[in-house]
Image (cartoon, rainbow, N blue to C red; front, side, top):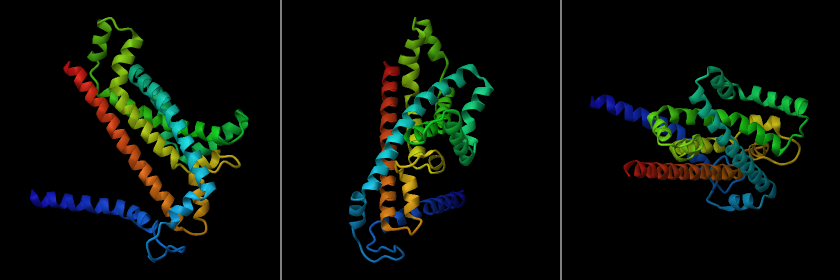
Amino acid sequence: MRHSHSKLWIAGALVYIFLYIPLAIVVIYSFNDSKLNTEWVGFTLSWYEALFNNKEMLIAVCNSLIIAISSSFGATILGTMAGLAIHRYKLRVLSILFFAPIAMPEILLGVSLLLFFLQVLNLTLGMVSIIIAHTTFCIGFVAIIVKSRLQDMDESIFESARDLGASSWQCFHLVTLPLIMPAMIAGALMSFTLSIDDFIITFFTKGVGDPILPIQIYTMIKVAVTPEVNAISTLLMLLTLFTIIIGIKLSSSFLYVRKNNEST
């Protein structure tokens, strides 16, 4: 028994090493005092200084944050509504409609949205088209998380609220919404992460001008992977970790409030 447990620990450790060593190398070489970035020369912070002095890169970061925040907000609202509808009406067609963008190849989704914006909506490609596109493919992820949360709940909670005289809106606002809030936060964080690093759909729905971070990084690495690219990648990792920590804290606080309400 102990031998099998040790094998599992070794296998798990190897998997984590495989996952995190490349990330550690990116972080370490962001401090490398070499333009070629092929070998370690010395420690420096000059690449972070160059990054913060790169006006085009800063504009790309700001644009990507605006797109990620806007699309995650829209996807969270629409995805929550979709999850509620799928859970309530039990129609298979609803599940297919909302989950299809998840299973669909991104290149197909990007081309479809490009044709839709240009030929149907006659929309000029830019920030608006990217936000709509990112919201579209993030809705399904939020819907899945909210639907899974609703499936784990006891339906008698909602029936009790209605028996006590609560209207449909009061039942949703006072009972359903607090219970699914951790799932909504998780869906919003996932949408934010998927949006800020998406390349394929952004590439197809992006117009002229308005630099976007993934496209900007791709343009930079065409020549070589410089420590400046490692620096922006390190900052993106820190941003991702920060959002995860915030999400865990918010989810824990909502669960704590829920337990206190149930105890009282």
